[in-house]
Image: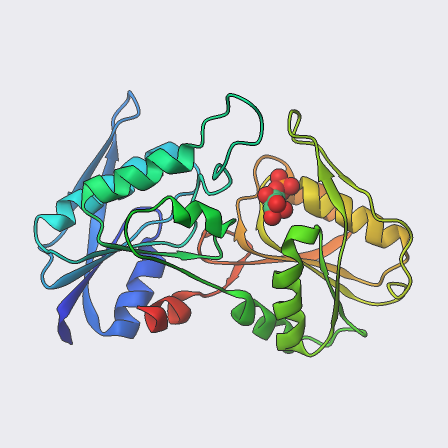
Length: 291
Ligand code: R5P
């Protein structure tokens, strides 16, 4: 066992943190979480950290609670070590990295400040929604990608002339990397989101080269499922074959899963940055390697 590392598994990422610790052959500490009737979190570390500390805690819903829990663990860890590497597999608030409409607050700015003041010395995230979000951080930060791990999952499947599709132009590089890992073609649809209502629409017109082909829709995250639903409906209208929805972070808010299935998607595949029914692909090895 390496004695110069301690991995602390925050309540939102305990299983993933355990896997990372085992890959690093390091000490592992879990956290006991109590939530008071008023919603406050009380966290107890179930051991004493030593050496360099790695805190693993995703910031998925309840986002604000998981954020405060992450800050609290970071601050406690800093009392034991001058090196606190905070690994946030899914970084909430990354979509609020800039002002889109007048008066909007760039909340990522204050989130970044809080991590520095809590004592984080380094940060790692996985497929962050936008790397602009990381520019607000005042500590060194690294974004790693789960695209190759996700693509590996599809390599084992027998797909009919597969085509990788990004639901929007912003995701074209992700689609390109995914397609390259599989050795297949890719395209990006044109999506429009109403900044006030959040509703999405696909603006692409009829496409050649989709008919009869199995499609892998690739996105960084699925939240309400709106983007995937609209993209899947569009592809089905183009007479595509099977449609798979694949993402790093599956939030699947509300009826997202039901709506995605209704839109004709055969299967949703995501990673364990957010644990759940669809989180089939494990990111512990890429995190451990990058650490
Ligand atoms: C947007 O640019 C992102 O890459 C995702 O497409 C989006 O956040 C997914 O959200 P939803 O599932 O609510 O459409």
